[in-house]
Length: 230
Picture 1: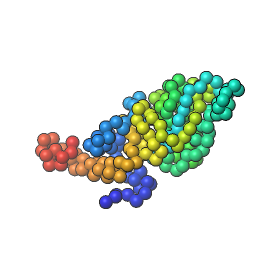
Picture 2: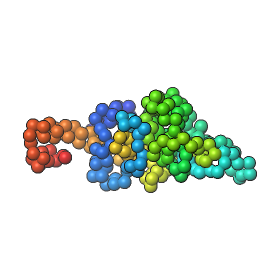
Picture 3: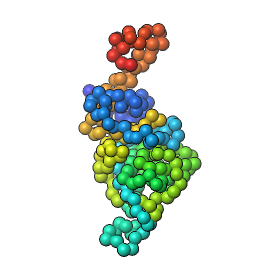
Picture 4: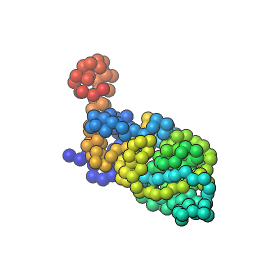
């Protein structure tokens, strides 16, 4: 039986009861062994959490803000179609971007301001973020390799969005669930989400019983024998 009736209900349960390590353990048991993004991807602030549907964005390196002698009209546009990608964010979605080299920032303060207005759930980028004081002031959940001020304008362009991407070798499809906290960012494929989160919720609630038993003096051997959780 499904424990939630909508994304909003599921995401609320996740925020209250789950953490990425627990969901990762469940996915391991289900045979999904490579769903965590690189440990280099961290939240800008330790208490930041993001949970939402993936809105994948494909970035590419370039070597000028605008190219006049080009066969691709896209190359004449500063930032490519980044503004269109950003404006397409829907409530509860996570802007997740990959494809470029880590030489410049892929997310910033004004982007966060727009994403908040659109009720987006967060940003996860395979590179750096910048405008850190502004993002921290806004409190927008942002996950990146760290902070670095160098702009993407003359160095990168968004060339597509709402398409499958690879992020650190992990496939991210539009609509997959992106869950990030201090311990990492995990991608939950759409076909696995119902079972994964049902089992994770059951595990989380079971772990509370184990914690209580340990606090009351039960040994770890006996606790694992009784509950099958550790």
